[in-house]
Length: 246
Image (cartoon, one colour):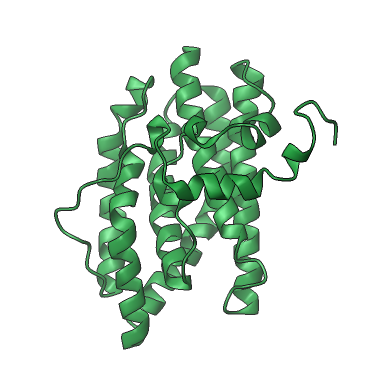
């Protein structure tokens, strides 16, 4: 596989996971239930581990910097994550809706990646998929549980979906430099919609119609929220030089 398209693809995969993992970790000690505090901490750890898998492939197979350099020494314009994952965590409803939309996207995306024929990616997808099964069961269960529970929970879940939907569509922004994978994005989107539509309907949540996607993240065009997040996430590493040994 040509290195330039591979690098472009892997950066989107890794950066999505890293930033979502960082956002999920913000619930540690703050989730509404003890069980959810533990569950979301585990999910955050998994997402960060998935990011490490993708960054490691970049380092070992594409002659890119060490994973720590990629995570802690790039500025916001160098990141290729979708804007969906960088938005502030908001309330519990916002976090759950985002997690569910991403989990279903990741399932559809990984199904496509498993057929790419590049052994390091196929092997990584196999490892990630085993954990993502539980992530999806968790987030999907909460969507159904809260979407049609009380008037207040429904209101919050619908408000979260309305706010997140344009950013979720941004997950399908073509990847600059990776025409092969970009050509598959429409099929991945169809699979994603086929999966989320019945779940959202069961939760009595309405998908916002005629929504314009928020693109730009795959090109390094981000909200100010990513800069704030990176300032916090990279603060400790940047107290030392990039060559420091931990």
